[in-house]
Image 1 (cartoon, rainbow, N blue to C red):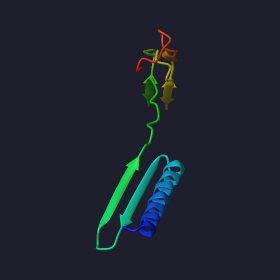
Image 2 (cartoon, helix red, strand yellow):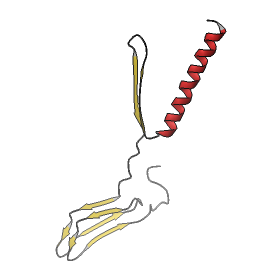
Image 3 (cartoon, rainbow, N blue to C red):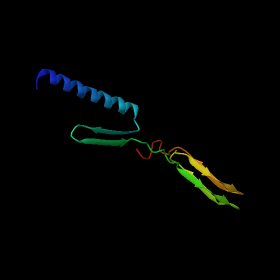
Image 4 (spheres, rainbow, N blue to C red):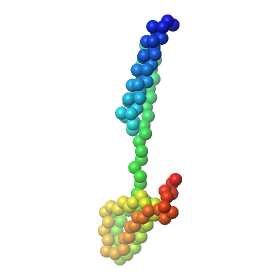
Length: 106
């Protein structure tokens, strides 16, 4: 390979590398890449970095209480999610920070 071909191949490789970096920065959550070249060959890549939303420490859905009854306590500090509540007495939902002062998953 002579010097000119080496410079051209290096420039192409550098362009592909810079394009990949720009795409990675632009689409941090997910990306799909398909490269086809002469001769029928191809390469497909797909990846994602979706972060799951943190679930609430206490979840209540459709809770009904007639004449008393439910206490739910979350001490992880992740909060409470309450929906469709119909009460007459005593549905207590409480969310506080971790008792030890650090994340229990750490």
